[in-house]
Length: 420
Ligand code: HAM
Image 1: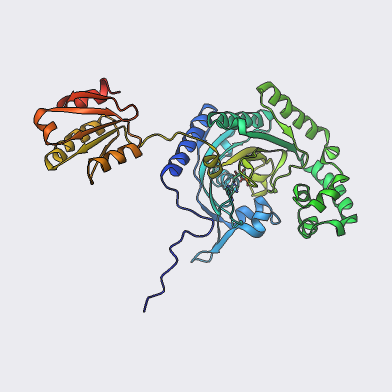
Image 2 (image 1 turned 120 degrees about the vertical axis):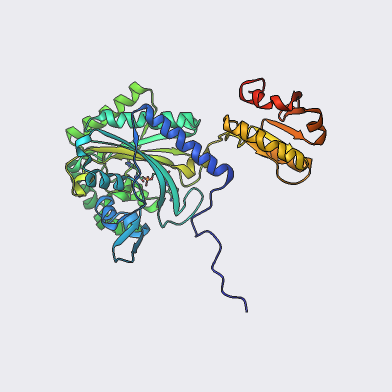
């Protein structure tokens, strides 16, 4: 009888990151970190698990994430925990529990896995990876502008700015939103029967989200709906005007999308998404906005906040990065004596910072193939003849050009000589 084996597939919506993909991930993270460092950001790492309350109180009880997408569980001690669905709420929680209010303004960078129980599709996973930045304690529009400038610079470095478009909107301050909500609900209630089932449910819970419905029937109803911009008070209007003005000064193109409202309840004033046409339905690659009430909602002092997060999975799929080769020099020893001779040589090279791949198995062709696959720059076959003569042929793999060198001089050559 065969015992019942557990499924050995990765869990639906999760995947193993291998080879070039994982290299791309690291490269993207490093690039983001280095770019953020130019703006004075420092790193923070918050736990992957948080109390459920952190997300319920911040994202909103009625948000899609909290209602349908959280990986929530009780641990063995009976605590209600969640695998974090996003990074901002955890950073806000850390701000309060670590007493960071004294250090404002704070500029924080984070990265790591996030978890949402969504329907998996291209560019949408249940375990996905974000890198994000938050500025805490700055009410002024300068913070929003620094963050947009950072996002744009980062996308430029990834050579993605040509494929992305910045869409933005204002959802105003609390007062403006309350005013708009009232007008919107009054209008939509009159036309409730024409709305999709989803939107009818949202009408009670989260009416603003109806604005970004994908349903054609909803679109028709929305044509004559009240506009958010008509409910903005003077403070909200000025804030948004200053954002747009600043973007012009920075030379950053943007498109105002009055329907962009975003799915998380903590936002106010600016919301934005860098979108692409190249990934199908999952078109947002970097999104965020301002959240001046979040820290207070979580029980902390009134503190302004603004930030964004980018999906690393989506960035990696979009970008044509040339990942760094794993090794620069391939040593191909044939025979035991050569293998022995390569021990000290490879160690010396590695100590001096040169990445070396030593072929372990197979004939010369197979070992050379591996050197090619690893995109090594140089390959050296070392057999009994080479050991006897003390001379080796150093092959440049891209051009096929061969240079002869003394075995004993290889270390010097690769560390500070002709083969740099
Ligand atoms: P979000 O729009 O929910 O915002 O996610 C940010 C980015 O994460 C998205 O633009 C997308 O690239 C990526 N993403 C989201 N869900 C998935 C998924 N299931 N699979 C792959 N990628 C995904 C936030 O999370 C906010 N915390 C952003 C923020 C920071 N707002 C202020 N500060």
